[in-house]
Amino acid sequence: MRLLLFGAPGVGKGTQAKLLSSKFNIPHISTGDILRQAVKDETELGKKAQEIMSRGDLVPDDVMIGIIKYRLHKNDCQSGFIIDGFPRTTNQAVELDKLLQEMNITDIKLINIFADEEEIVHRLNSRRACKVCGNIFTLAEIENSDHCPNCNARESFYLRDDDKQEVVRKRLDIFRKSTEPVLKYYEKQGKVISINGLGSVDEVNFELLKILLN
Ligand SMILES: [Zn+2]
Image (cartoon, rainbow, N blue to C red; front, side, top):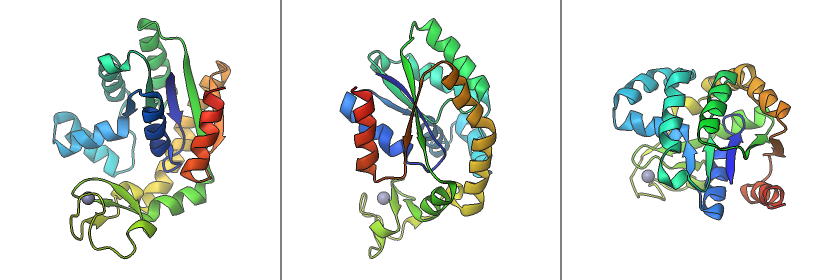
């Protein structure tokens, strides 16, 4: 199974990608995770990406394509993969098509998870990350605790820059303007499956599996 997971920031696609990854035993390739790890490791890519991402802007196409190409050539991608967060521009989609053609891959599907924008702003603005382990929690999950449920670090919760309301709105704006053409690009090829992301994680996953296993 080879999937592109598509949707606005905060629509829950990362969570669904992880569930599908373990269900089908294929790697979850998150360009966001790759970039955040690079930032943490302070690699050259990380330093470049950090400045761009903290503004809420998109990382340039050539950098993103380089990351994807490197990752798809690893052995664990041979029987399938889920790409989450890429392509974000039509140019990236065209470049990805070229890459997949080179690799003789023709069975790609795009899962489009959609949701209301105000709901997304609310969702992201009310989650917190742990600055020690990087896990993300909803405010409800950590309401009465002063330590991270994942790594036990104390007072380690913070609102990520890219979850702040004004940055989220900017990301949604950028998403709408530059990424929606990508959806149209794949729609023309008849490769899009759309699903409402507003339900619970389990509900959305159930609907997704129903479609994918059909
Ligand atoms: Zn933690």
